[in-house]
Length: 286
Image 1 (cartoon, rainbow, N blue to C red):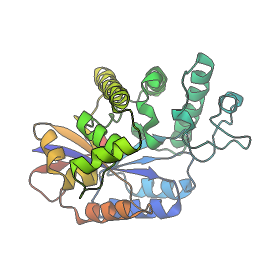
Image 2: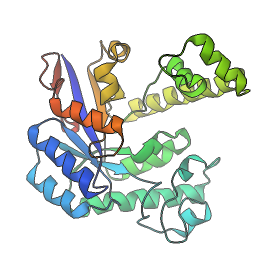
Image 3: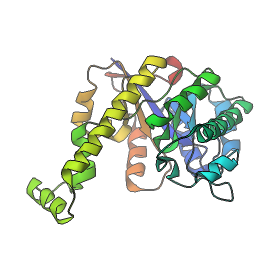
Image 4: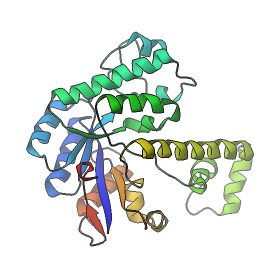
């Protein structure tokens, strides 16, 4: 029987998301959630955590949305926050080089976020991150420093997407009902250098493999990580993990957008939880 962790991301980001996650906790549809220490709804989070110790609570580290807890001059210098101390969305992914000065500032920010959760009495089971910045290979030593500093032994893996899927999602951009010929035509019309793009994407895949190996060697991790909807609805995704012991499935209850709303309904229906093929566990049990 495969063990499954169902984790709801963005706990504390706002009242709507936090309340929707609480509903899923109450019915037993999820086993874990990760908290944004710089979110807008921390008082509600604290109340829910105290009332529901049955699931695991991780830190959803954030470097590209809402307020920085440190407001570091260095983060401003490198363009990660604006003059008001707010993170600039996506900026963390645009950095080409992470000098020691910047790494030190990032460590300070992540430490402040974890300290915030610990000050609320929240036991941190593991870490992941908002928009998955903790999977940036150049920041592996930063993430490790923070994990080791707080004695956190568990971390979310990178999404181990196949090269075929990367190519399909990033080059062809085709609709489901388009033929391969039509898709190739679209690529040609846009003058896309397919070979160059392929090399870049293969490098991306290689870094994913390296990052997962790095985490596997140092921390306790699952055997894989996917979105809940992908695992539930895609036979090929499920086959990828058919011989694995434990995987994590991510969901985003309370967010706008048809896909997120559809996924929240799927999670609430508890098809995996009630299946004899899967055992729901939390990160505390990993």
